[in-house]
Structure formats: C-alpha cells, structure tokens
Length: 239
Ligand SMILES: [Zn+2]
Image (cartoon, rainbow, N blue to C red; front, side):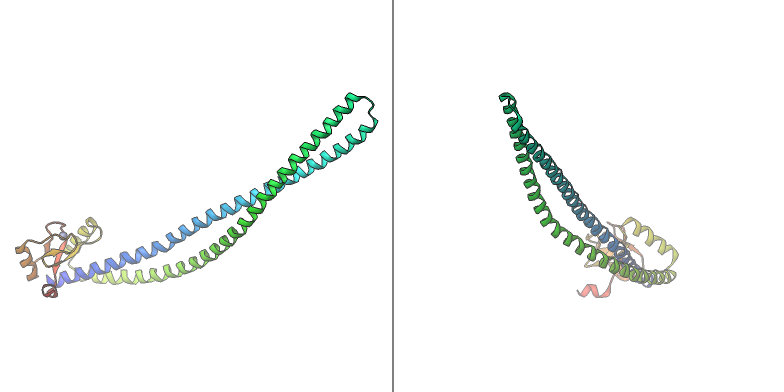
C-alpha cells in the first residue's frame, strides 16, 4: 500500500504542475486581451479628438465665410448710403450696417473660441498619439512573447501529460478511480499530507488511532473531515 500511496502523491504533484501549466497557457492571452482593450479605449479617445478638431476647423471656416459675406454686405450698404435722400431710409440702412457689424464681431469671437479649443486639443492629442503608438509597440512585443511562451508551455504540457499517463499505468485502477473522484470533488487536490496529526489540506486533526494506523502505512486512510486520501512521511515526526 505504501508504494501505491507514494505513486498517488507523485500523481498529485504532476497534476498540480499540469494545472500550473494550463494556467500559464491561459494567462498570457488573457493579459493580451486586457492590453487590447486598453489600446482600444486609447484609440477611441484619439479618434474622438481628431473628429472634434475636424468639426472645429469646419466651424471656423463657416464663420470666416459668413464674415466675408457680412463684410461684402456692409460695403454694399455703405455705397448705397450715398444715394439715399430720405432720412428714414438712411437710418434704417445705418441700423442694418450696425447689425451686420455686430454679427461679424460675434462670429470673430466664436472663431477665437474655436482657435483656443483647437490649440488645447492639439496639445493633448500629441501626447495621446505618442502614448498610443508606444502602446501599439508594447502590444506587438507582448504578442510575440506570449506566442513563444504559450508554444513552449504547450510542449512542456504535452510531455508532462505523457509522463502522467505512464505513471497512471503503475497505479491500481480502483485506486486511480478513487483518486479521480476525490480530486473532482475537492478542487483538484485528492491527496493530503498529515503533519503532526493534522491534515495539510483542511487543517483539522486526525484522531489518534487513525494517526497510528496511518503511520503503519499498510492501509488506505481518508481524512475524516475533507475525505481526501491522507498519507504520512517518516521525516514529519521529527519535525
Ligand atoms: Zn482533511
């Protein structure tokens, strides 16, 4: 029995390592997805700024065209002033000119607003674009590194799976079945070392009589609390 239990302990060590390798294979691509999301957010932000800049430039051009029209209108009206004899018409035209001038002044102020916002946006955009391009480089490097790492770990995993199969062949089928059942129920850990009469997995004490039997190592024992297969190691008593 002792030999079989030793084999189960080795099997469990392998399973732990296999779990670790499988986790490594998942972890890299997950990290990449996180980076890609970050990059996406950054790219959206840059795109938003660019389209705002385009919008502001268009608004600026529109106001400039309207100001030109306004100036033409004002010039024309001033020319007409000379020919007007009627006092009332003269005042009305003066008012019209005044309104057009006010309109132009308002539009000039709006253009200044646009220019100010454009300046701020352009300043921020430069930094954001730098950040984005650095992020792209980083992602490319990470992708390469993760692909290499995954390939390496997959190879290691396949080797370890093969060696696990070999190990399985040396264990009694009934015992192996028990191991798999307990493993499935207990978060992947089926075998627990008992140290100082305490189960190393659930941390509860093993009854004295069971502990004595366990030390004889000739029968299969289960933790009365977590039901894992328990074992004992010679060196543990002196510790
Ligand atoms: Zn236990």
